[in-house]
Image: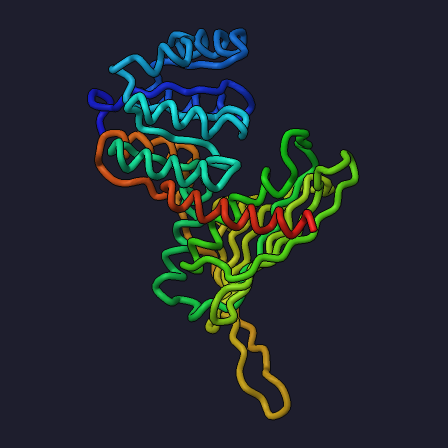
Length: 323
């Protein structure tokens, strides 16, 4: 896609994450406007990237802006996405795509009816290391999957409008569902709140899949150091995606195997093998992918259906936390 035919997009939401979207779309030559209820924040970004700060209704009415990216508070995602689809826009909406399952299903139906792209911001699906991991798992490099676990841990940023499950876990749920290629038949979760009543600071979620495959996700914003690790265990090997490492070590294959023994299985170790991956910015790849969707070049990798699958797991985990 050359700069001359790059589709135009507007970004709604100029806060912590919206600023990153604004920067990337601007550097891709696609940014045409920004919008935020906090007009001062919108104006500051508008001046930085030399685009106008405009009202939401004004953006929706502009036929020269075919796509919008929504990075507003989670409760507003579904209403804004609905309005954008009704206005004929292609929509990129940050996770979660909605808080309610019915709203997510409604957005999927509206996007299909309008013939517009609906893409959900599951960022790590666009990470080169995860894509390399997914490719190797899919072609059977480590054999049939047996177990997957992820840790997404840090100290802060503590939120008050959502708990740690909804803030951190969608990324890992998205990756795990993509690797397994199925939805869990049962979801268990436990959590604890230490800082604010009713808002979990740590959760552990267990996913039970058909055929015995299992996974668990541990998330916390009360952890002394940052950890972002996905460990995938197969019959013929293991792989680790550690996003806190340098690119030369982000994805490592451990060709360990377990052999039958007389009294018990025997663990056979092998040397770790780092997978060579060219460095890239996942958010740049994600924004570029959305522009391709707007241009009609491909369908979203993380479409509404994928967003709904993640949302179903989040709801099941939240129900387990509430009981």
